[in-house]
Length: 170
Image (cartoon, rainbow, N blue to C red; front, side):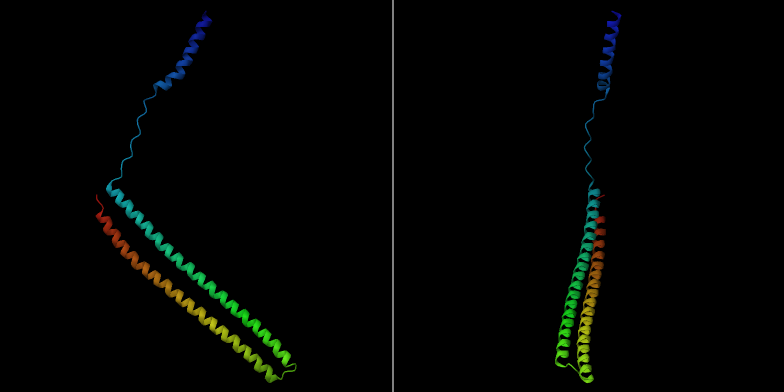
């Protein structure tokens, strides 16, 4: 009998130990609705977002310019390399023809032939140098123009942002 009573008390204590903490907990409060940001905070957030957008646009414009310039430079180098290769093969063919037509050329004929080829090489080199310099100068001018335009835009943007900041409600 005592054994049954102890078993009964143990089972009851166990049931209460499990149920009591669950019933003793406080009723859960409904979550508070997040406060709507004030008009001032919304205005400042809009200004901050405009700053980020402006900076991203300027970086994108700069990156686009540099990418376009790199592409133009590579295209120029490729065309120059093709022109050098074409001149080299042409001169090799002319040299073979010259040696075939003149098996025993005189010094004067050799000198004239070599000078003709040197003049052609120099003319190509000078033309390519002028093209490279013109491209370099135009790219430098484009970078300077973009930098100056971005400076002016940045000043105007900051003036606009300062006015917007003053207009924000308190």
